[in-house]
Length: 417
Image (cartoon, one colour):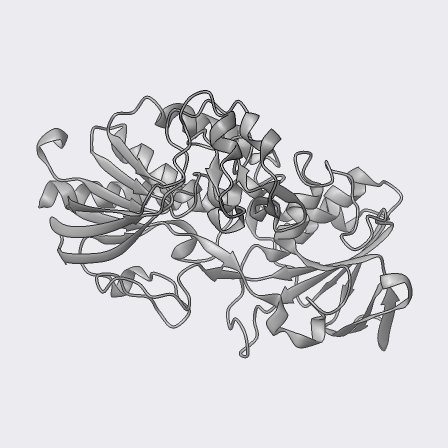
């Protein structure tokens, strides 16, 4: 029956999109999976650990890649975006624009090209904390497993990577392509982005040395990150001995994100654990308004709160300024003890809120977003479904569960068309 019905379009190749695509394809439905980046995995691929097991996400992604690779029911487009969707449930038409990767499927990831490449670029996988060559592998577990080229960084006329490649895998003259597809249902799984902390002027992001956001902290802690898991601050690679976490950076604020992002408290508690493991003597301070760790995570929160090296300060941070030696200085209220706190630390981590990846972006007419950019189910046309964090802020486990439900809804649309 599934083979005789229409296809499912899944937009977004992160953990939510992968889950939706695999769940639908493994029961026989044809899926077109579209990801704007060169490799699948999304933001989860940049985490050091994630709940509930606090294990590295690459192991979970590897399982999904093993399911994906042999599945002929899934057609994958990377470096691609859906630029238009027209029609109705059971009969949508979508246009997919694919940017050239300049490296084809003949690539065997031999790495000879990077040995000869003379140009560098900021490593976006590590949030610009280090560099890659202009020809690069997106990350060590990247799928598709092939290099890509940032042509904007290539010197004029340079063909050194072409000359070094023994497999004719590099196509410097590749062009953008367009593909038209017909599908029965559309699943948006485009995920989230961290709120731009530079908009919160009093917290010093971008102006005060060694003030970073929480997604950058994940890469600092990761063994495959820019510092190999050693807790070093960005400005001078000094070992972090004293660190502050600032909660609700942008969240629960009418001037920025009016909602609670749900997982920031847990993320900071988790990252405090990272610091303790990397440097057992480090002093850690967490400035919070309310600690929200619902349900099964209460025990984890209690464990962190009882750590003698971790101090929780209930109060809103007024400002962060630069002190001596590029040390951030945190000025905040201390509600429980009364008065103000003035604390100089080696580094500050801002718990920036989760923002829909679609906020501020143009989207096809077939999909509707609410005032915060989320794909709210209540305002969608029949056959347009949201999955994971493009729908609401959530942790990885909740996003996976929601995406399994999205696959079922997409299948119901196919069957009913």
